[in-house]
Image 1: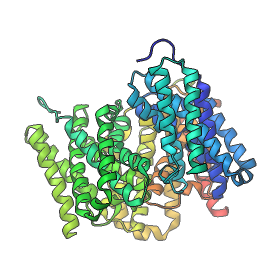
Image 2: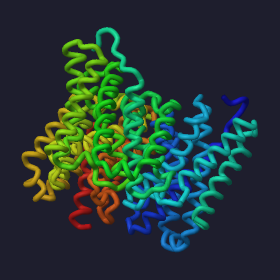
Image 3: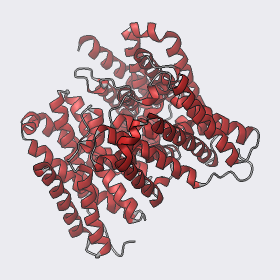
Image 4: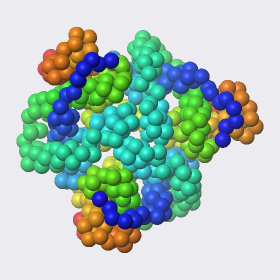
Length: 199
Length: 199
Length: 199
């Protein structure tokens, strides 16, 4: 499937975990949870997508068991506790943090699936589920209207577009993994922000 | 556990995926989701049960990563988008599509568990969870009252009855897998339809 | 990580399954589900945490596929059906059953993770998720306000405190597994009951 090296740094996975954990912590602050609730929703939102990717789809021991990931969730919890209410006043912060996490998780998940020997179609699927999984769990557990189903939001569509761009560049045109990944992430963020801005 | 060949065609698994995906698409149309939401709810409903079966219970790479399954979800999405509103006017269509998917997934899931070396009790459990898993996820994610808990619906009970009939015929009486499967499916559909009709 | 033997009897896992299944059955009775719904919610609540622990985190065939676990769920269902309404009048019963299950699952889950070769940080995480997973699924599926997010309840915090006590005693001080486990369970139950009593 892939020719030569094709490895995004683990920092992509860790950054996505952190960013989604921040959105979970922000949601928890808005709902008035106590600090344990903030941590737990940050945890589920941060590691949910990676758990589905590794533990259910790829049948690997979940990467999120590494201590760095838990540390990222703890830091996100602290950020939520300290800045939560004021961050929530800026809906744009939530949107951008979430969109960036979405892009990072999409390309990292798709790459991990490709490196596990899967074709580009299931790799895209796993990338998208990696990306949207944590947010879906966040919305289900906090009893929010799921973002992924809100009409005109292009949430999963943004992940899909970014993943498709990444796959087309890296697999189709032979672009190196890292620039292809940044292009895919940019597509996801742009589609997502544009859909909210003009949707 | 099993003597000789005991293999239902993969078409059973694929048909159940397709039928559940149709119920997901119909639900999404009723809720007013856009086409991405219709696809995503069709996907979760279609592959949810198979994911639980393979990825969580049997610890195998999920069959649903095969491209045929995704294609089935895409076709179900298109059917939902084209016919959704009119299909929903006929509650009977939803009931029958769902009941048939329930029966197919029950017997296929139970068989896959038996072929993985499990006894008939856990195989029945896995068959039932295979059958009801996608619908439970559909109802949880779309914030519907879960069908499985609605009194008098005999939803999980229909799956259990069909699975028990299948196991009794195939394991107890040595009937070949395919006729035993069709008998189990018929039991599930009959129990389910009768419970709605007369329940 | 661990020196020498370190094995809690499987009865810890089975007892936690049973206790959580009872809380699921009690919740289902309160919601007015029929007997199939009572069984299914008892099942999900009882085995949910163990499924996440084994099937998703540790990548092992779930222990809950053993027939003893299903039997525990069946007995819990019968208890719910027979005593449900009167048990629910005593909120204390629910609290104690749930707290004891929480403690048992925390120490058993943490130990299983340690024995799988994980460090104490991921082991604590798996213990807590083992403990709270079934209850979270119970609340999500029955559309209850999730207990884990209710401010001042110290639900996940009680599990974490008990797991930390267990790990400190067993790993740090070299106390044998069983007394360390009972100490951890006592901490969980005390924190939980005290938070409800005085919280």
